[in-house]
Image 1 (cartoon, rainbow, N blue to C red):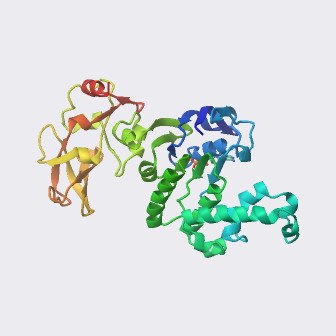
Image 2: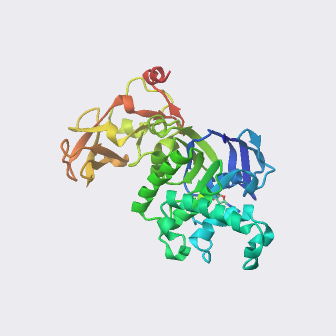
Image 3: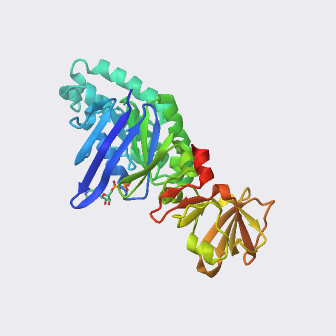
Length: 373
Ligand SMILES: Nc1ncnc2c1ncn2[C@@H]1O[C@H](COP(=O)(O)OP(=O)(O)O)[C@@H](O)[C@H]1O
Ligand SMILES: [Mg+2]
């Protein structure tokens, strides 16, 4: 069992607060992703869990025990870095075997050349070889064990870094943007491989990325972070359908959620939805919640500025009148074949309108409150 609990973690560098009182419970065996823009403190938080960085205050619990006075090696966690951190002069085999040798061989046994003659080394090496080969075959790099990292592709290097973490059989894998050095196609393939690995190993994964699509496709739960704070933690579909904060709504989903201020809504002559909360300043709606109608009274009217045809979907970019912003509409090739310059009215499903106040906090319509209760 290796659940992780973060209790009011704070960290500053000089005057700058980088992690501002983060509390988070990560379940045993869960795939949890920390997602947020670059610089929001994700790596710092992960390094605090790993023990590579000390927090200023707060506690890190692993499997019910406080690990704050434990060194990284004693925490039963393994970290996989964006940069892979492989030793270029060592073969793939030696890179993967390294943590096992460090742990199991004595100082004398580890010495170059003479170490081989020290009693006991042969037997230990045999066990290590078997374990490295097992991890390598699971990751499909068994045929590369004799190569140096410089002779591998990015995806292969990433697998070697994973292998080196796997042989330690940690209770927790910590991964910091492990796919961001790969090209787009490989990144999508490796997403599936990492989630498959998680299922097979059944241990806790804490994964860091700035890429919301990675977070959404890979995770059991996602923790959304900005500027050192956790905004919301939930299952991917929960964050998509039920964001508690406008920043979460805007970070999750691609294309981005549409946001129109109530002032613009009114100045365009469109009627606000019935039962709207008096404190609402912004209304947000997903591209798939908008239909195209004839322009008319009481509608949000605009002009199509560009059309992106993806084959299965068409995205229309619609500029609202009087500089009141723009809206993206997702439609189907069979339904709408709009061209730039065409005036359109937007028909928005009232049930899918999300209301936010001036501070970006979510407000609920009466019937939405009932549905959520
Ligand atoms: N060792 C350090 N010294 C000073 N500032 C740092 C250090 N490490 C990170 N920072 C700053 O802390 C903030 C958060 O960094 P980081 O946790 O790496 O963010 P992320 O991983 O989300 O991109 C950034 O503004 C970064 O410049
Ligand atoms: Mg980072």
